[in-house]
Image (cartoon, rainbow, N blue to C red):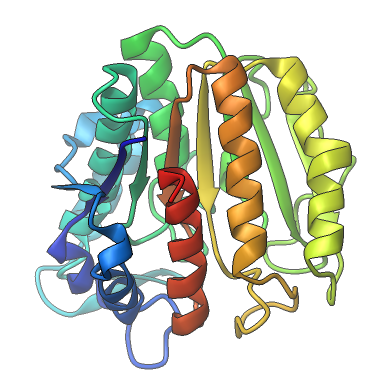
Length: 309
């Protein structure tokens, strides 16, 4: 197995302010983890910059241009209550998009079996024309559309195990029969979406909410009984993972009790799905995870599972 790790030093330049949970130290923790000898077989490349027009795969061009215009040359601005755009933000935003698209290209070209894009800011809360929840552009949605447009993928599955529901991804694909969005998440919790009854107009939205205090037992049950059967019926050509690690038991923003082994387990299940239907193609994108040790250990378990190490 070949696993490609994509990141870029500019991810450290997206400054969100003192005390903000989505902070540069998240990338520093991952860099330290992936510097260990067990990851020596990882292929490593820098996440490339995407052109602004790439964003139009999932967002109106007017929205992309407006965000670019408000990006400050110095200091920082808030685009919503907790989403900060600083003078160092634009490059990592566009490299997160570019890394997601490049990862898709590499797995379709069979240059790598799968890929993990360790960039920030995250993307799954970004709705069609609304930045929110630390997110500006929806990297997973752009990657899915890119796979369809450039590589002819007919069906793309996006699986989101971040502790917060990916309202943005759900919003973008609500009316789309060609993309299945499935999510486990704590509920009730920010952003307030993700009920089982939210299925989209084409029945391609699959929500399996968890309750505060739930652990790996309930998490695995949600996948085994709800999500994986639906994904197998859907038969995706590409598996995209919105890989948030804030369902870890030590995360400060939520109350689920997953441990590293749970993330390794679900990764293995999604790789089996990809092997069965998508020629092994898996693209994983970093979303949340705010306890630095929990993030590093959980992302490490995830990547080692991708490597089959």
